[in-house]
Image (tube, rainbow, N blue to C red; front, side, top):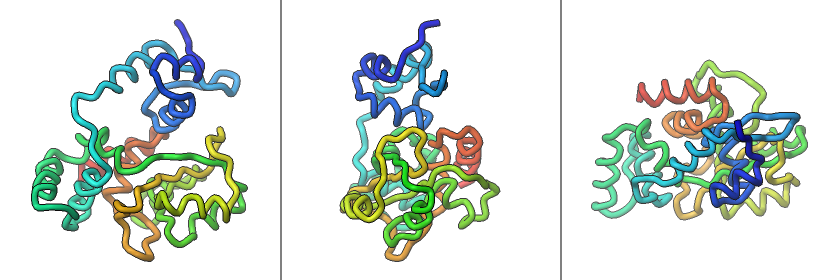
Length: 221
């Protein structure tokens, strides 16, 4: 069976090697490590290639957060037409909207000194999600995986000045979901994302156990 390196997979998909690594880490592209290096087999590559041709128009970040606001029991922002559209979409169920909801944030991953990770998690404006927010919601999920958190796009540069981190490192221990400042959905002082947002992030996790839990939570919401 033909195997592709990250660089070769990127060329086949028409994206950057960084994007391929992101897809691998999020589970959007199935791969395996051989000698510590990611490789992708041809069937997985062709599946990802087909998935990159969506039948729907991409959503805006604001549209994604409008649907998530409804899932959290809140009234979404926007015009009456935008709110009505969000209700129609939400009626389909979050589990059916994962591809579209990915537009809510841009995922970037880093390696920070392990002693600095708790400081990042406790920083004002950093909102934990996925497995990092499991204790806040009483979820039976324990582990020592990367810190998963939301941060404003405009705050990221300041955070990187405060805490040196290597972006794109593999392995990594910090995953930051950067949200457009105008779409920031969390109230002041929030430290953990609401359960529906946590469920969506778990459903997109590269960890199989977390994905299963995310799917179960989405089905129950």
